[in-house]
Image 1: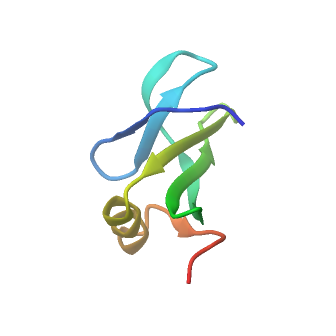
Image 2: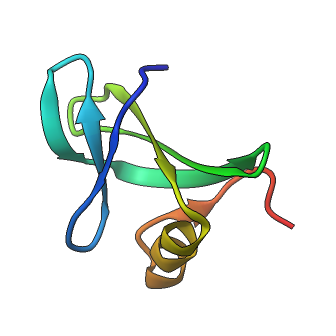
Length: 76
């Protein structure tokens, strides 16, 4: 899985695409997992490349409540 730098704008979760070297690439159907107390959004870009972004708890819950992401593993 590619490492990505997080960037949130507007509604959905966006991240840096390591493969295409492009910033603010929107994630398609992101899932937010909790691992070791960190909130990690994983998904794919429009071309099917894997992406990930680390979020704070507030942003993660905001994206889930707004319907832009789903809960994954590790939530209580």
